[in-house]
Length: 331
Length: 260
Image 1 (cartoon, rainbow over the protein chains, first blue to last red):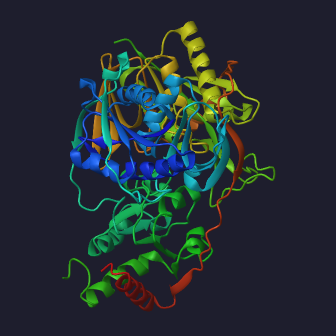
Image 2: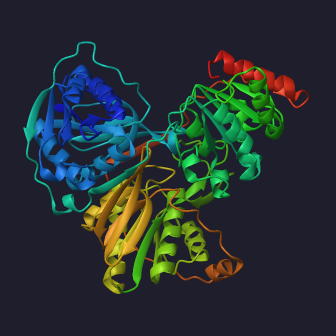
Image 3: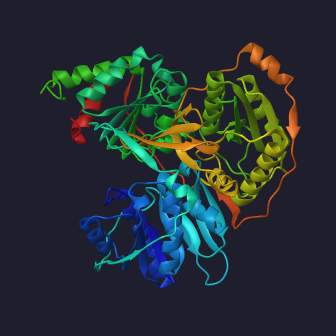
């Protein structure tokens, strides 16, 4: 009986999100008095294997097959199913990223087991029968208490619901290679190639985001927001109303169906703060709302507010930054 | 190749505004003051299907599993250019993902037995309300078809479909033969609004019903609740009465947070 965590990686370097999966997996393993194992598809770097050890992984089951040279949901799921058998897993889990949820759903389809995506907390783990857990709905604005049957238990830990935390007593992970049996679709749904442009500040990682909503009024009216973001070396974000109006590309959307942001400060200008938007913004450490409506949801949820027209406030902030000799373009 | 035959699976979900409330029995979202809509990723899947058929010819079937009122979402799809509406009626309860997938698998198989195979079956990446991340994938597995989720680009050439999936700072590309199933994400396109002609036509659209069901699965909802309320004492640091003072207060804040 083990707790088996899927190790997401590209080219051998494990994804940051996997560390969250390992942290949650370790807590569960301690609770069940079971060892923590990991499963990886393809080669991992020595550094990544060392990291697994520091997170408390006793054994990493490494699937070896030429079809595992790059990501593919079917190939990975086939390998995880065999890895779970090799490990003797009573729990198979991953971090709830797009990839983690995808692979676990494919595993569930193969084994005919239930699968709970985006679990916040496992509340009850009886030796026999269904487990109790709480999972995230509507991007975290609603919680579902549920029971999960089946063996092994299949679940993902909601991304950002635990902080990555190395084991108090780090060890070294034993690498156990195995040859998975891959199905016919394993070579069909595989990454053919990638188009990755190295970008500077991304919306997901920017320390400061200037967001605009319906109140901005038009595509052109985003120019002052862009100027301010540039001065502060931040990124411009927007609400779903804005992308639906075609004022900004969807890649700028903050929200349940867009990007989850986690800046030091989120300046939300002319955004009413619908649930769809808020769940994307709630990872921000602080929120400053600029809105003419003091009762707007975004204002009542914010740490700071300016009750005024963003079209006046935003340019005035840029002017004030320049006056004080602050910001990237004036230095 | 021959004309495309596409099926899009959509879900009727509440359209929440500022807040989601739960009914007194804790079993569902209180929809007393909410409208309903098509789950956002699926609205984009409908648009993607309509665009593919505009380019390559063919027709689009929209399939939904839900209460009788989900007819509204089928008619909306018809109003933006889909050809066929199929409802798998439920008792109104939320079905678990395994049961839903089994019922959709059986409905798709029935449609294909009668009218030939679908080249593509489109799903949304995940539903907005229950966000189970699995119904499409389970259905694809049951029908033994390739499926990739999270797609923001679909192109068809001959019998091959090429898809793009967004990753950090770029895209991954996949290429596989049809028939296939695809999980679409919002951002792949900007769904069109229905025209007046489309709306009028949709009123007359025939809603076909297929009875389909599956065994209850192993993930069982016990109840819904709102997370603990975040208490926020908003500090108002400026107003319209003095824009310059407001700007100064904001810059002071930026300096304090070391963001300049």
